[in-house]
Length: 106
Image (tube, rainbow, N blue to C red; front, side, top):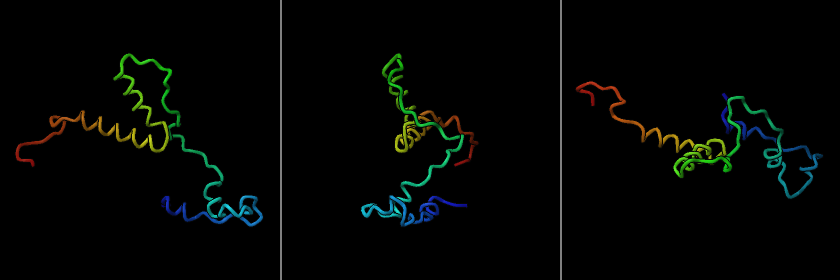
């Protein structure tokens, strides 16, 4: 199983005759990592689209909830913020009565 560090370490410098490698201001190993070929995204990955500010919300609370929900599809950092918001909502919704327990359990 490959992890992301394996992929990062697998980048090789570009060939000397490559137009990017001929530029002395760009190290070829950096250029090959940044300017590599694109790969197709898996089908289950959400499309990055951000928040649609043109949609009408009935209240400020609905608007804030809508913005927070859209963080999941705004970009890398916003996606992680969106996941944190979802986790906080889940934690706030949880109640002790939701967890089965019997007398004597600690």
